[in-house]
Image 1 (cartoon, helix red, strand yellow):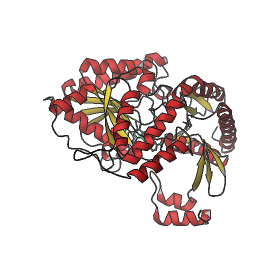
Image 2 (spheres, helix red, strand yellow):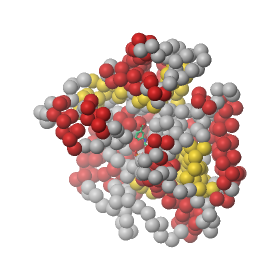
Image 3 (cartoon, protein in one colour):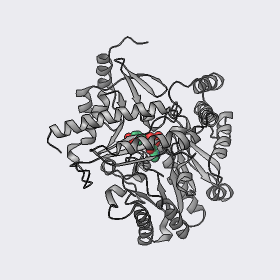
Amino acid sequence: MSTRTTRDWQTADTSHHLHPFTDFKSLAAKGTRVIVKGDGIYLWDSDGEKILDAMSGLWCVNVGYGRQELIDAATAQLKQLPFYNSFFQTTTPPAIELAELLAEVTPPQFRHVFFSGSGSEGNDTVVRMVRRYWDVLGQPERQIIISRNNAYHGSTMAGASLGGMGGMHAQGGLPIPGIVHIEQPFWFEHGQAMTRDEFGLRAARWLDEKIREIGPAKVAAFIGEPVQGAGGVIVPPDTYWPEVQRICDEHGILLVSDEVICGFGRTGQWFGCETFGFRPDLMTFAKGVTSGYIPLGGVMVGERIAKVLIDQGGEFNHGYTYSGHPVACAVALANIRVVQKEGLVERVRDELGPALAERFAELAEHPLVGEAQTCGAMGALQLVRNKAKSESFASELEVGMVCRGHCFGNGLIMRAVGDRMIVAPPLVMTLEQVDEMAGLIKRCLDLTLKDVKQRGWM
Ligand code: PXG
């Protein structure tokens, strides 16, 4: 164990490490937080502070920290064979077994998987594969992929292009050609004049309008997260996805579900598309497949596409060094077996999800909260200036960051997306721990309210 102090760590970090999505200079002035240990749903920092991790690392540590089954699987595979590739007509047993198990736990249209190292790489694979599919079918003019504003699909050139984050598009010449965006199904922001169900249909029809504007023969696919995660846990109305499915079917375009956050039980079914009742042709996954213990991602390829690529496609010129990495696949196998053995998907559906929904309904009564939404083991609280009028704070006040600061100081990790405070705790969180988390959230909301009033913002 290292004897370096927090200050030492921070100085070395600032000297050499550029963090993702970070203003380097302002972080250097503040100093980063150094996390040194995890157990269950808790983390410890280099000052010995215990923190309740209501974000599962980064939406991924679904089985909790410190699981021996995953550690053993990694150790055994590292000893047996730490690496071999799946290029050039070779493969390894863990990659084969994981492909088999994924075919079992995913919806029935999926029999094949293409492995990547991350969710972003998975979505790059989606772009390559969707366009290749239409090429092979003799419709190369079908190039355009439709996505949504405020979507998050990763940070590679294709992932960030599919994503609908303006701040990302503004850097590096994005989006790449052939990717267009429609508005997101965010009722609080865009739909309050309608019922949620009416708005769900309206939002889905933005897709139909965009397809007709472009010309259906030029559209390759539509991609969406079942619930937008990084965008702020935006749970769409129940009417949204079935209508999106109908529209994709009507125009014959491919439907892609980005399940990087929603997959492997987060929504209370194995995959978010099952919770929301749609049938994707492709499904991106990462994060929860290994509970984040080791990087792994991939794309489930529906038989509609797999058949064409296998029977008529010839060589598919795409792949990554770490596609099917044996250690990552061994950890994924152990992780999925834990999810199965402990019935974590059913647990989210029957126990954790309902408990979270109940606690969030109570938090919705708080004077700062304008909307509370949950879906399975994720939840969002929209902070507002005027509850009765659903009136938001000016965005430059960064009230979400003020609240996040109080979480930070009170042993709670919660994400702020604008003024939306979000959680996605490990699926193993007990009901007592749900109460503990809700108590901490309530305390942080009270502190934020006091703070905001003192600043004269409310
Ligand atoms: N799709 C979705 C839906 C995601 O949430 C990715 C793709 C990209 O995965 P990789 O493994 O390439 O990062 C993600 C990642 C946040 C946050 O701030 C969310 C993600 C990543 C980083 C930060 O909530 N999601």
